Amino acid sequence: MFSRTVRHFAIGVALLALPALASAQSTLPPAATSAASSAAIASIPDDYLIGAEDVLAIQFWREPDMSGDVTVRPDGKITLPLIGEINAVGKKPEVLRDDVQKAAGRFLADANVSIIVKQINSRKVFITGQVTKPGEFSLAGPRTVLQLIAQAGGLTEYAEGDKITVMRVEQGHTRVFKFNYKDVSKGKALEQNIQLKPGDTVVVP
Image (cartoon, rainbow, N blue to C red; front, side, top):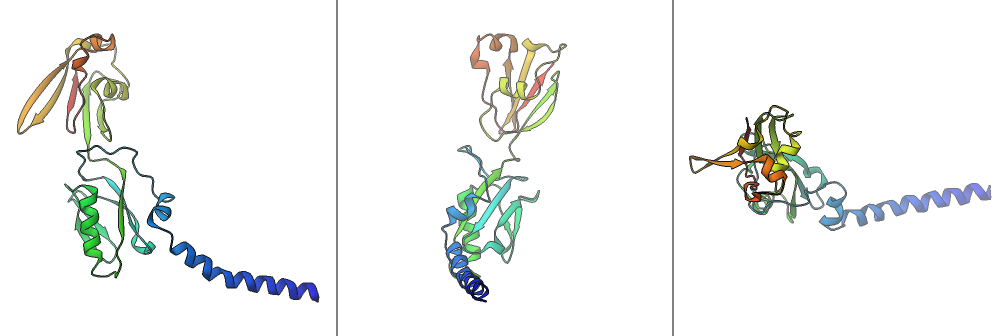
């Protein structure tokens, strides 16, 4: 009888402690609540602007129902609970954060928003011709011509490695850069191994 009473008392104390525990968890700062649920990209390019297909984590402090991951649609917009649609394309993450926070202020007394870039899918480069895996590749960080060729599985046995070109469109005009794989792979003419920009196409004849 005594042991049963002690057990009931212990259960009652535990139940009384639950609201306090939940309250303590709800007051954790945004960094503590978002770190476990959202993995940010380690390094975002300085010139990065949000684009279609990018994945963003939108975190509202103390508002878990409004928080979550969103993918930027082809029309450049994202949809958030309560707020609705908001344009994201062409903005830096901090600008979008300010826009979301301003829109949320119409519904929340203390809107505290953070935006984490989880995937950059809008910045792409292309490689075509005599490589093992031609196609498009995401450009989430710095990448050279040689690195892209390696990512594409390397040259095929029929590739003309001394006649590779990089095509880049700037202000409506196409620029062509020459790349000699044989020289660069031997440490020669390294200035040809340029940093790629979004939209570049590497052509391997």
